[in-house]
Length: 226
Length: 367
View 1: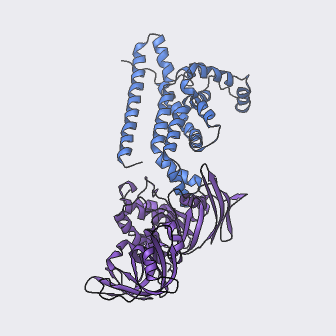
View 2: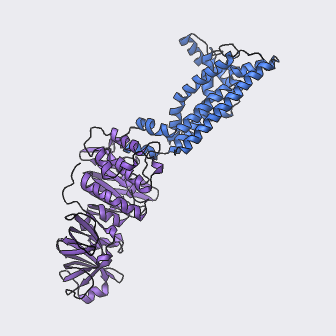
View 3: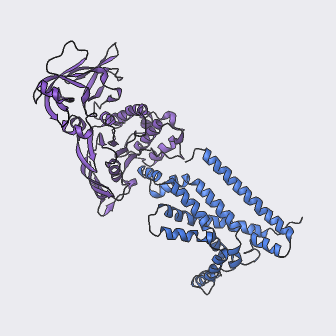
């Protein structure tokens, strides 16, 4: 059995890692806000955040394609400031993946923050901890299972991304040709051997990751965590 | 001094409190469930931002119409009913959480708190592995380590059974007498309040109905009905003077000696005894041939009769005030009126262990 070009695998891992990291930075404050707020805007924001769950990736991809196009305000602004177009670029893929995987970060984190409740934060405030201090030292450690779930789901979900990539990224080796696109291409060209190898890698990787998460969750649960 | 002029409303309830609170000793906030005790405590702490009005500590305004100091900047300690120890930290780390954020502030040292609350054996444990009483002690210690200007305690013992409560009360007395942090203590248990408090505030339906030094309030027959006549009882201050061979301890009160079963404290300790009004018998003449050991000469200072068959009699015995609950028929038969000289009789064994505690003999020392 020959080894297929593994470039798409590394590209996918790279994309998933960057997306997960950025989602953690962007999604944590959003999830925190959603868990704490009594604002009337909350259901609107929640619905918008959950939209990528139900929207066909092609629809999301279609709108992003229009947004990224240099003739649009955003796409034009991007071209002017960076000198690059967002369509068919790795940066464009990162932005698309962030939107596509947003609910997989925000929802587990929001649920984790909500399950902590106000009580431990009030306790922290009574111990002279500022809100930011109590977030870092109380809320975040108590929500570590939520963080783990959010990271793993976002990573694996981005890894398996197909429709959105096809719409905004196309199939440029080394730039936008991610593993799912490569598998699709191998199947289209009846190169089942390479499709098998790449699919098996993805299958095993996903299973091992999830296995690790569930084992860790079990250890947390037995470690006497609330 | 903490000054309050606040209102807080939610459907079916309104809190309206205009009150100055002493900034020393333990002030008990006593009232039935739903009277607004916990709400008032949360308003003081700044945990309930919906309240309107003014909250000020000395000259520092914490809340008025255009200013709100967030809870973490008020310098108050808070002991929650459900302890709220951080589950992801050990007891030692929970204590350190408070200690490191109060660096440089005056107050008891970490070691003093660990010793006073006997926390040493618990330090490496996680909160989920602690018993109710242990968790309470850790939570109280943690709150004290924020070096608070005042410690707010929201029924810290309510979740404990009687045995655990009896185990914690001496620790709280020790804190009151040794650490000296002023406390506002919410409770609906009169025995607990009578043991600990120096001041009493009664709250009913969101209003403070009475306040004052606890000895004065608890011996006031006009308030007894608010507290419930079964709970009515005065506080007697005494000095432990001897431990007799037969298991009785001799206490000296301003009105004479008193013998109670096994008061465990060093000779010379100041002891406070809660005498339930229903355990006090009155006699016009000095009784002889009676099994009761404790007979104190007293003068009637007030007689209150209600609609029922009972009467409440307030007496002065030395410097202390005693409350006796007798029948209206007896009060009439004995001809009790203000100024009547009589004898208050107390059966030694009727004073429950939980109604005997220590009381500060000197101004609270700072550790």
